[in-house]
Length: 323
Image (tube, rainbow, N blue to C red):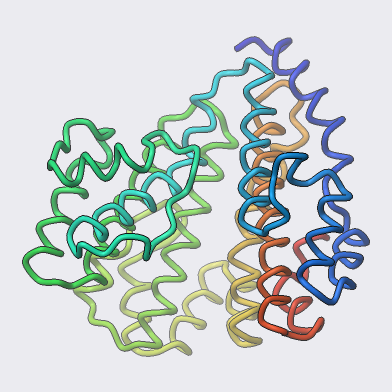
């Protein structure tokens, strides 16, 4: 795509960015004390649509659809955005494997608007037609099915597919000519590896388990990270502090919510410099991620309202998302 075409698309994105929720808008949403009041507030802001039920999943699902409708209208090279869809694609693979292998339907949510629709994904897994999957999914799908059928180990099934997800994201980033895609991919995989290490340190997982779950990536020595996790969470914190992830270490010491916030914000901060390159896909990718983050924030608020949690619990979880 030419620089001039990107400039036109970016100009449109700049106009749309003003409609993203500000910190004050989020505070207004938090001020709605019941879920129904939150949903009406969102509807008044244009979320959902005339034919969309006043229900959380329906409204948030429609907002995700709007993201890709907007990008599609700009006639840009959609291959640039493939890497952003991998998490949803592989999630649906995981859901299909578990539904087919356990015979239990309806227990797992499938994402809409993925490259392979739900029913087709279920058919592929049911018939073991792995050749119909993208190449990055085939081996993981076959291994996950065999593992779940032979061992019944759902966690190992998750590890197989989650690792394949990271490998696909990192491979897409390394092959992309767009710096924003490379930055997104590297940051996403690094953050995921760190989250795995923290969980494994807390649950006492073996080195073999961590080696199977983690994916080597630029800027992070996963072998040393795994050995640190063997020694416990404090050892992970020390490793992160020494290797340039001081903010992650500080967040871990603060609280679980603070660490989750750091994970979310690390990816956003990694691509932030690309947001200002008006002759590249950077601002477009940044907008998609900002919209996804906006929807995630609203989902957190709605979930907290459904469970009767106080305002401070909401602010603790989403703090720094709007700085």
